[in-house]
Length: 501
Image 1 (cartoon, helix red, strand yellow):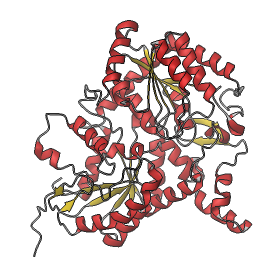
Image 2: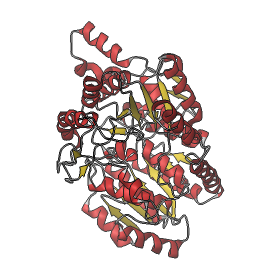
Image 3: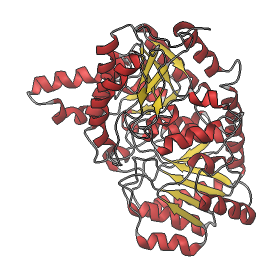
Image 4: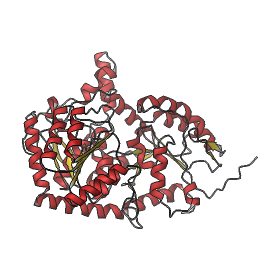
């Protein structure tokens, strides 16, 4: 029987691997409650039911596990069946919620996290080249260039091929030597468009965490990027314009399209929804802090969902310094490797100055008028959320996209300060190109630096950084309005691949 679906409907499919920080901005997390809550909060009460029905959150399997690595396999195994159903324009059921979605036209394009190799392979096997596939790049443009880009843009070139060649020469597996080659440094000066020059070791201010082999992760990412037809880049021109332009030029050289669609933050004309999204305790704390200490008084601390400082005494020093300086603070420790002693938690509670929790509503906190500063690892999502909220940063980078972003934040944008004394490990303790400085490796040095930074935050330099970040916030608010940079690029995508434009 011929399909009766409306051919004037544009169907765009997003799929990712199950890590909330990478897939949050496309509202995809296995059809789970956190995802639906984000969608509902963003749409608010002024969006019609017809519009709401256009956003379909579908889970292809069900799991209660919080270990993202254990979810790769079942997602890869069940995606193909779900995608086949969509291409056949049949009704489909969400495994998690039981919701049955009506048939719609087959997807006109698929957007996939490049790490989701199983989904990319299934999409190609079913649709061939008839449906374009785009990588969903949530990372920092400058770091994408560094890790995956050609040498003439400051990149490592084809690092996968280099590691494979070296493994073959030595007669070992890529897993055995991959990380050692990836992390090899020799004091080479790295020049990436949009980032001040850095020594190669400055990209590793902290030792590598005990996670699955980092080089394997990059292998998969690079393979995924090569197998897709182009990319959606979730960053913003107001943050890293030169780096974005360089990344686009690199992709043009290999005949791949790039659409810059960041930042993807709660809109409401550039403002977040006035809700703490379930955390009443957070709202009460912020209102109380503002009443007692004034606007921009609270320090928010979060190192994301993966990274965590490797010296507990440095965390203790941060807490003690904030209490000493009478800075009210909120501390989120979401990483699965995060550990806080009972003594430290008791110290915070007895001080009356802090709130500590495994999960806290980050965007709500950053946008609250009581919040003044953000101690952050400088992951891409956190940086964009801070810039979008107009909140200056105190940077504590670890690896990946964080070191280059921290350097940009301090030296180019002038909307934050990078902590140097918190650096650890063989590479982290080496001198910086910018000023020759290197970390001393002591708690005392960390405390001294942090006290100086907090004093700076309360002074003229702090006011200057806040003014600068507020200007970027205003630019972010324009990105998705008519004529804005992200709106223009998104519209260009639909003019090429959609109908009715």
